[in-house]
Image 1 (cartoon, helix red, strand yellow):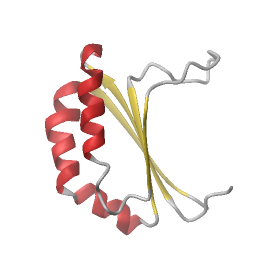
Image 2: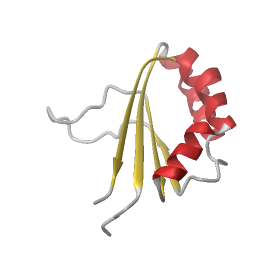
Image 3: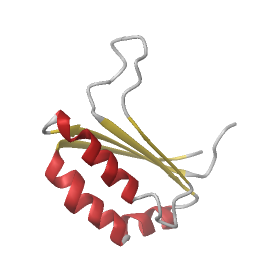
Length: 104
């Protein structure tokens, strides 16, 4: 199914200490109740065929979809997002990459 007119928020996390993965996953689950989220996926790198175009050095990933930019903005301003950023992502991660896109 072609997803049009939705906003996709992809985030990749590289941990300071790989042993903190359960704590980061706990933090990612803090985001689940945010009401503007359409769909959410929390994951780790899949064990797929290694090719030059595949980035798999990250420790965890988050994919969130929204029905609109306004819903995305609501998510960014949500108190639970602040908790995740300040208590989990900020202290645990050495690198975070965010990719936002909208369907056409």
